Image (cartoon, rainbow over all chains, first blue to last red; front, side):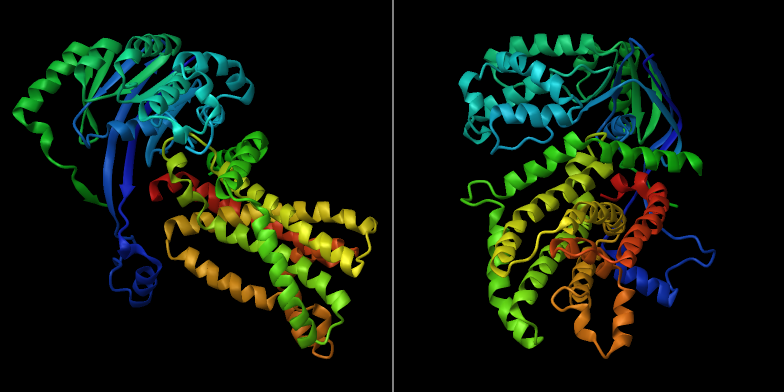
Length: 262
Length: 266
């Protein structure tokens, strides 16, 4: 069974400036001046997620809507297990495929084929899976014998095609996307669209964070609206988008994140 | 808390056991570093050889040692010290250097450490060529004891794993630590019998006893003695093994407390 559950999840980022180096910490220990008497360390944190409750089941395609800094990416990374909640609980069953960086392990000095293996492994495939999928990837990106050359010799468009073809070859159970997957040039657009559609239909849960509400309307069947790390609305896509548009017009969500002293 | 330990152990195990991945990562890094150079990783061997053959003769004279026994001793010592030193020093930057991976992928943190250790072992194997030459010139015997180099290196690598994780955690949080480590390791090189032998302290046994408490000495010895065709002492083995138990337990404690904080610190 594929399922994600978040119970009252908080994520607080500590902010370290140069002031938290060894020197000041030693000095503070030695002088005792900047430490509060109650023994609690004074520390500036940014609360990126606050009290998130969320349950996702098989077939759910969740869109995360919100302004810059609302916590969309942090929520995705928390789902991916990159950040473990500072408070609260998260349970995930199913294979997670975060596609925040579509080409992890990419190296311009490696050949196209080598990069297929590099990225494939980092995207969670076994070496055998990558080998099985290599002909398909080579076919989709259409780079032919260029794949034997270092990626350094490719044009920007060719690199994007290859990275895209690798990323869309995965078999995710839970697919996490930060903004849409795209592959630049027009001649490739139709193939790219078909590939993304197939990738999405293979995945059993989708979580997509985006500003672009049309995209969320197209791909998702449920949505949440984040503001300052809180879920302010949860519901159908149309409803959530309507709330988002209305609140944007009212200017409610444009305040910066508030810094809280712990 | 028990679940924290369980998760830390799971992370360590999933990273350390995924040998296909760390072997590839370690090798790729070597490939990247030496791409388009003519001799690749043998560059470090070449530099090592230059040093051994220039400084070696001088130090043999300084320490009043016969060249035939001093050259193999020093070559082996420096080779091993370079391995230890780079594991500790690179341990301090292993998490900060892996930032791109650690903040976008769900990846075992131990995997990065294992890849780093493997990479340094590969460099060590390349450097062994220099020792092979020294062996031929000064006729170092190959005995059954030579085979002990395998368990010796294994103990060194496992010790490297906990040291690098521990140093990595501290250095990710406190960015002054990598500099500090560099200084400490330089001093330790002089305090450890690498360039000079424990035997030269004859008549000054007190200093000798202090050296016996230097853990680096024992770790160097479990690899060096087999390279020289001798068996390491029981004390060497025991100390190296105890370090894994004690250091490993300490690191497990620190790791289970702070492992989940590492991405926040990056």
